[in-house]
Length: 219
Image (tube, one colour):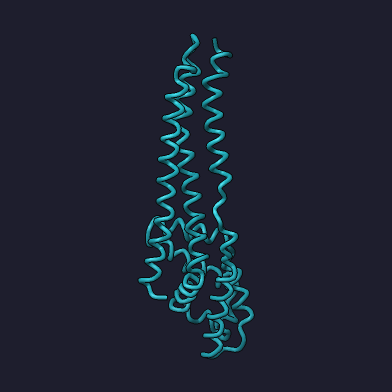
């Protein structure tokens, strides 16, 4: 896979992360401004200022939760995009990076004496380097590594690699790429929209509680 292509793919994945991060945070700020304007008179109708104070704290801090939910949704959308549209390209890019840096890993004769831990360490190091290009790439690739045990997949292919030779090296590289592509199933990476819905419901419920219940308790 050409480096220009992977950079374009990473940029598109980054757009999905940042757009949801900004979108969810902006929505959280807007919603809580509306809640504060609607419920200020309710929360301040008693003699105690505690309900109004808690309402202000709730509406000020709630957008932070939308920021983190947006971050999670953005990463999920980026991973789904990578797996659905560019699963083959990404798997080939990973294998290409591995073969460029550690060509001996695809040679059974050289890797036979290596322990699985040593092989896994080299693979992890190379995959982590892919995430060092930018903060967004680091976020996406680190999440990808956490979600899927790519190291075990690559290790199983290496352990089943037949006798060494140029032909077997190419065959093993293709097997690794195919195994990685099969591991990244797009259906398993669809963003879960239940968390944002629960956050909105809990946010409104908390503001309503501060405005309607607390003034009755703290009269």
